[in-house]
Length: 155
Image 1 (tube, rainbow, N blue to C red):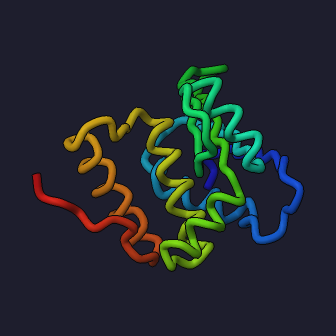
Image 2 (cartoon, rainbow, N blue to C red):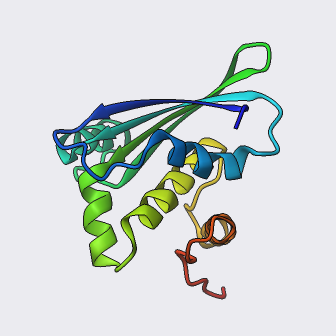
């Protein structure tokens, strides 16, 4: 896991049930394992009010969400690439885990992987993009011994 530097900011009232840094590194490493650079990511774990504010300010959506990704993708020195920031909402992730009957760890993994793929330029603005991203998320989750998060549709 030498090619990743993760900075974690714990900015929520209750830090209980948040995965350890080692888990975040393991999940992100599965995506970045073939990258030669040292990749730097900041993960900020927040409450609903903060992610709602960010979601409105940056996406004009006045509601909380599970994750926001802020890609940067710039070299800050030779072989050190600042990929960007992930802002994860602990409360939303916990609620979704219960709603979709997923283990909390698996859902944290999925949302972290989803956000990291956004940092790398993947998106889901249309069916084709969504299909590509969901297939990749399924593949990564299976490689980490989690269940597939998506049932893929045929278009």
